[in-house]
Length: 152
Image (cartoon, rainbow, N blue to C red; front, top):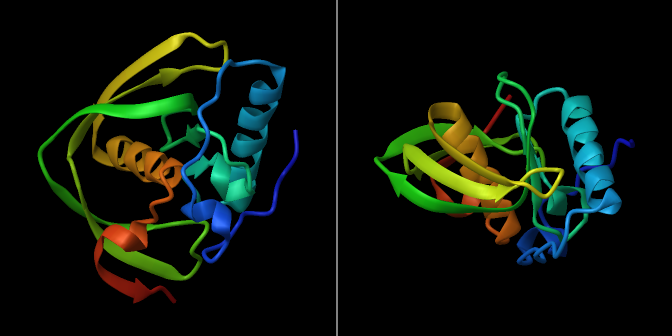
């Protein structure tokens, strides 16, 4: 495993639609390992998408304190409700914003073994999953924020 430099706003890869992963193999397992290690090494992140380490592939990791979730080709298939919360991003250091998102989501994808995963959740996990899936579409939280401010 390796800790990668996190790509910051302004890098082209953050604005691209990430490529679908045709099969989960050793290379993708290593990508998931590297994403997790990089996220944990950053110290204050709860999620990381492959484009954030310069890799235009549809893979994310999330850990909101309930254990690591690794998803390949994740998609939001259902959503409901409305929630407004403050978000930040490892790729946009020193900036926070108030973002409106669905309060509950159902996300489908594949795990590191290529097996189907189906997650229905709300709260912080729902927000983190949506934030990271947005990265796969080239969307940053600042694109959706109703209010943006610099953190101290």
